[in-house]
Amino acid sequence: MIKKEWCWMLDNDKSIIKEKNLSDSDVWNIVNEWYCNGMYPDILQDENGIDLEEICYSNKKDAI
Image (cartoon, rainbow, N blue to C red):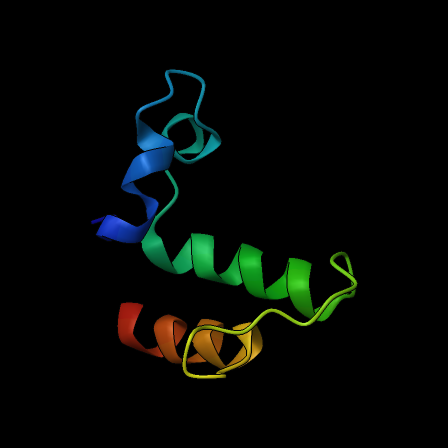
């Protein structure tokens, strides 16, 4: 089941999430790997100052 955070991506017929039938956990793993391996140079945080790496870790645990 895909969480609502990713639903906007499903609107596109060519969505990689839909095409590859990725689970929510798969998506969080991809985002975490992308971010933690420096593919995005800036630090991303939510409105509470929580880093994207922490958000990914928390959501991966919840998705399992």
